[in-house]
Length: 300
Ligand code: L34
Image 1: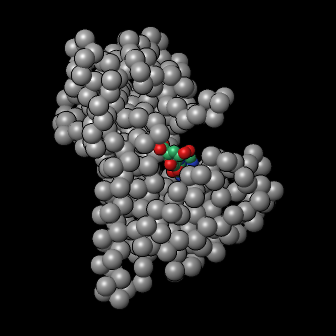
Image 2 (image 1 turned 135 degrees about the vertical axis):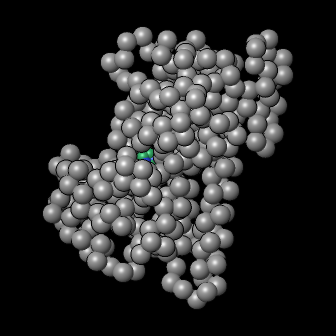
Image 3 (image 1 turned 45 degrees about the vertical axis):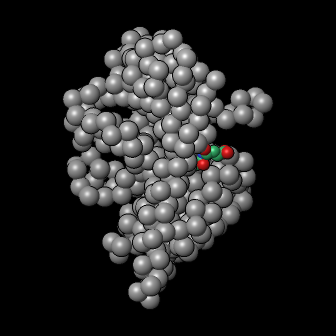
């Protein structure tokens, strides 16, 4: 039997070393982040100032992207920000999309611009990311923000990695000197997550599809982040007892059910802390987007 409380879950009678495994509740933590932003937006409004405005562009009709984008617009409304959703057909030309971005870059009423990825094949994602003004790049994907992150400058941090850090912080565990492994080397998650944990003095390892003996690398991890998009890749035998596991994977089973890269059933018996999917990193990505929009608004 699993007893659920607001922030953690105890498996009382599992005869394993860890009988106090805790679930990191991304939903509750993302709510707290959104409430912080909401209070700040209310204060801005009370001063009679213009409210922050986020503009989200979606191209085509990828059902998962539609869900995420809808959640972003809903979160913006919750915080009291203005938002704009621009829906473009999958057939839109690259030129047209770049034209739209140029228009938004020049619009003083727009503080943040996000183009939901992935984009249709005929559009060059790199060109699109480069076209967004770095000052309005709420995703933190623009080369000057990426450079800023790696040089240790104060700049926009990509939403998902920022969310991962906030989830780690919620455990109260000091990362200094710990071994932090991330499985996955994408520009959006793996690489920035490694840098952010390096900044906390963790010993970082980036594992990937060519890593030899992934299981033994993962077993070294005091903190394990999985971000590869392979359902159930991380199993309990790959986890160090007591480790913190953050599951960034969002996969859909053939039946349409959401699942992460982490096999929750086996890993939760070994881990000290673990995030669920759904209700883990996903909602944090959206909450940190609200923070980033506020940041871009303030640094104008
Ligand atoms: N430009 N493209 C850009 N920025 C991003 O930050 C993203 N990402 C990723 C995909 N493309 C992007 C997102 O928004 C992934 N992502 C994202 C955002 C939210 C959620 C998942 C992925 C989310 O809300 N997940 C919910 C479940 C939602 C559902 O029912 O499908 C969760 O609880 O995990």
